[in-house]
Length: 126
Image 1 (cartoon, one colour):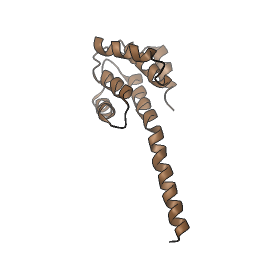
Image 2 (cartoon, helix red, strand yellow):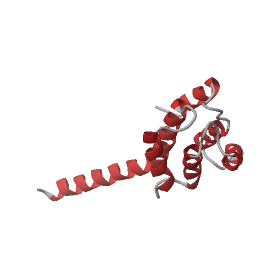
Image 3 (cartoon, rainbow, N blue to C red):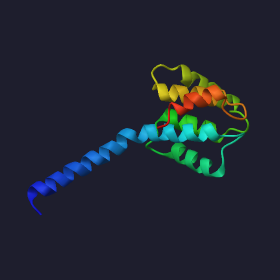
């Protein structure tokens, strides 16, 4: 194999590795949005596994971990402590809009997300 081929392959692999890093945050938000859209009273066992992975992942930022933990704790609605954190996050303009939207929707859950909030969640999914 020639030097150019090896260098080209290494460059391509490096670029692909960085693409995964760039989209990691969006993946967590998309996953949580999909879970919340179908949530009914509490997350399913399969969804709990995904949420635990997000909450414990070093690839997830602090805001994603807070939201994942809050959704994990939902039993008909978020705990009062989680609701307070989520409400604050939804108003924090330093956070990305997708995080603020998701935090706001989760803070308002009462058995499930409202139809209007489900529309907002659809905007967070591909």
